[in-house]
Length: 477
Image (cartoon, rainbow, N blue to C red; front, side, top):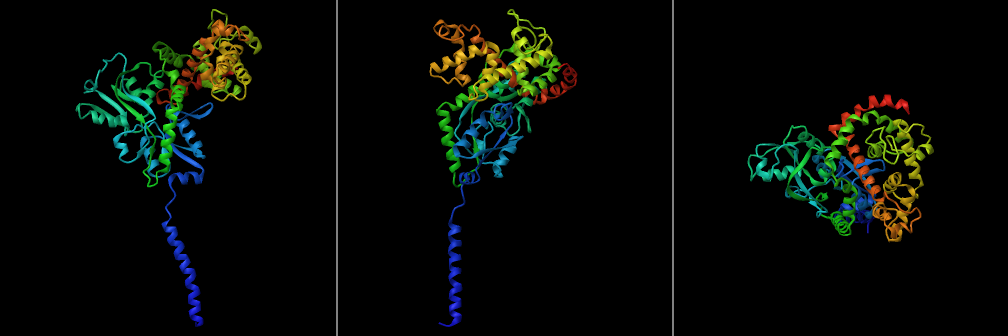
């Protein structure tokens, strides 16, 4: 063999290897969405900020959709990364563009949406409610909506549902507003600039205190929420999510989250809500800076402290109870002495001391109790006393419950009025056990309302306006 042929032969061998490697590489399928997530160690979820999906409180990020997404990410062994979208279009664009792996944003499963995206099976059922202003004629069915202005979010399932209803009732006047929030839609009806809107039952429950004059006329339909996905040739991520959602729906996890986020909103009282909104306007501005300073000093969200203050006295510094507690935070004389308060009716002293006392109770709780349970128990102790709370925790454990979960403990507090239970309790009979449960539930409701009152278009300007008069009051701290 000539030297030239040998050289050619040696050159052909690497070329053949490279060709084989290239062919093998070309035949290897691209990694699936699930494989890409696991490789980068992060699940990216797009959602919208709302009280029913995802928001931030004093404990960090939370919301029903957020809690589910975070739990699913843990199951996959990866971290959760949230992409916030302002509109529904942005939610779906994030899916289309590959900037998110899935959408968890309280999305109703509809035929139109399923044409483009894969949806999980439904994990939360809601009713789509027609909302109108109290005092106006109540529509009883869809035909009675004809000729009236109905506002909904552009591109929403409500717009899709009303478009279907227009085939039956052609004179429906439906206006789709781009980027509108639930608060904005409700505010239009509340202020008389629209006749009706359509909202989901969970959102309606959350917002009722903010809009006490708005009521449900009837349920137009029932809907199911699902997670949305891009269509993939290798849908491992979709199937993993399906398995997860089916399991948490069956094992009660979703029901527990619904109880956690919505139960305190179910016991709506029209007169209490009207009173709260009135005092939000004409009393809280005088004490906002004081609550904010107390929040900084104690480490609590000032809105949580304000919620406690409202439940105690309706922000009335001269309030007095039949048992002798008095002031804006309703301090006993013993607590006032303990916290160094000279005048319980001085609202700024009362707010400072009430916040400091709540922090003291919070710090006395076992460190293993997770948030927000630890805070709810501290608030219960503010009302019923830490001794009775500990008795309830002991009883909870004795009965097989979890003494570190407020959902379990609150069921035992009322039992401390029964002889068979309080006779074995260290601190005996607790007349206010059941009252403490109602107390915490009310404060949770006021706290949620204050969170959203500071962020909604309707009340945002009012809350900002509090700064000037409240800043003057803060000099008394």
